[in-house]
Image (cartoon, rainbow, N blue to C red; front, side, top):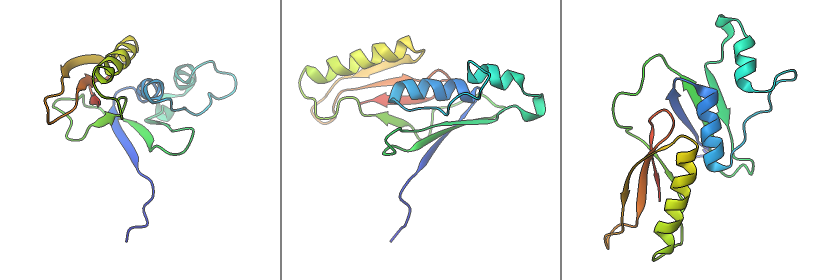
Length: 144
């Protein structure tokens, strides 16, 4: 029997602190406090010499229930569809018209944060409604 109790989800990206901020807003996660003397993480990172520039940034569920998210800078951009994606469970337990209405409202909130709405997939008798989206760096995720 496994003793593993937690997982971390890691995203390859171009701007770790910015992407961590987006996912924190999406999920209600928190980022570490900004070091004293700085207003933002970006300001702090710009103050560092190039050899000390941050190559990763994390955020976490303040309740400790959800997985930690780590965003690591990589030199290459995203080229193809994710092999693994995050399902954001915004409509759990909702049925009928309430489910797509809730998903659409959450989609609008995320689009305002910079996400992209790719397509809405309506319930078909076998699958529930969901919305396929991309975060601010093009990583696909589903609102379901």
